[in-house]
Structures are given as structure tokens and as C-alpha cells.
Length: 291
Image (tube, rainbow, N blue to C red; front, side, top):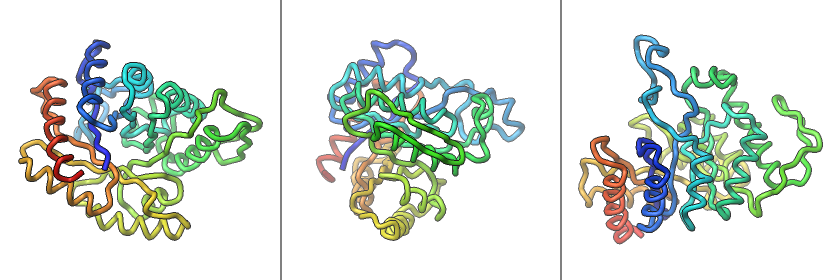
């Protein structure tokens, strides 16, 4: 399996510290870094009396992930750069395709694009994007991006995209793999089977992910695809747990067929580098026992 960790956006604005964090993560053996995508913060009073659906507001610092990846690409050699997730329907498709292609080129092929639809309607409105058709639009965006990454000329006549004689230049030597992050409902599993190279589960607590994976494999076969080539990126939370529990959790995911495991659990009372040291300790234990 391959092992990753989340980039801590609370690390601040010092580029030297961001460089040191990325180089240390790479040097300590992590295969990839995940990064959330929030372009605009929304003040809590805009969500009404119940507050935001998740704890991401105007108080939450977030670096723009593709710019961050371009920076990290220049100061590292091996670590993969992975959105968790790129909220594609908020972004103009051709521009996002160009930016991803550029990161893929500048990183030497280290980008894995994980796209999703998000939950924050206020952020969509601020960016002039339609919140209500974002799921179906995502499917068309994926097709457009994959064409732009691989073809010298793109002619596409879709519901939301009309491209005639369009290309990206330069093209990456190899198109980045494109995964989808999201829930485990049947309609979403069918979307992953039809359009994606892998699934990053973003599910409510209590969701039976192993059962969803089995169902997803059936949908992949219906699409004429080999389930063994399809990726699965899951999470192991190490906070308030023992090394034995880390190993047991990673082993369960390996048995399910996970290809990627993200090590999670970062208390806010520790610095970014202190949390990284804790993740690195867990990585050593899990790798030694699970592989």
C-alpha cells in the first residue's frame, strides 16, 4: 500500500516552513500529501442558526491547492500531490485542466487529481458557480479534462461545454490519474465506476465502506473494467489510539483492497511539525507490520 498524510493549512504563511514540512514528510517516507480545497471562506453568520455543515469557515486558513502543489513540486523530488478534493464544479473546466496539466509537468508526473462536488453553497455563489447541478456537471467536466490532457485537438459538444479545435500546449507526458472523492450511495458508486480511476471515500460515520467497495466492484465489472486496477484511498486515525490499533485498522483496509492509506489525527494544540513527527512514527509502525 501507499501511505499519505494531510497538509496542515494551519501551518501559516512562511514558505520556508512549508518547504521544510514537505521535505520532511517526503524524507520520512510518505508517498503522498493530501490537501483540502476551499478558495473562499464564509463567515459563520451566513450559515444561519445551525452553523456550517463542516468546520470550515472564514476562520479556517486554506492555501490555494494547485498553487501550493506547484510550490511543493519545486522543493521535493518524490512525494505525490493529491487534492482531497479539488472542487471541480466551482472552477472553469479548461482553466482547471490547464492548471492541473502544468502541475503534472512541473512535478515530473506526481499529480493525482481527486475531484468532488463539495457542500458549501455560499462558496459556490461567491465564485459564480451553480451549486444545484454540480454532480452531473462534474461528470462532463471529467470527460473534458481527460480529453484536454491527452488530445492535440479537442472537439466536444456537451450540455455545459462547447469546445471546437481547442487544446492545451504543452501537454503532460502522461495524464494524471483522476479519482473522485465522495459518498457511498449507489448513484455515486456508479459515477466512480464510469468515470474515475479510484475512489476516496468521504462518508458519514457508520457507513459500511467495505460493503460499498464490493458493490462498486460489481459496477466496475458492468462497465467492462477490471476492479483490480481501481484505486481506494482510505484513512487511519491515530489520535487517542494505540500502535496495535493503527496496525489493526490498516490491516483491515488492506484486506478490503485499499491501495492507499492516509494517516490522520492532528490536534490543534500541536505544531505542524510536531504532528508530522507523530504521523511519521505511526507510518514506521504500520509499514513494518502491514507493508
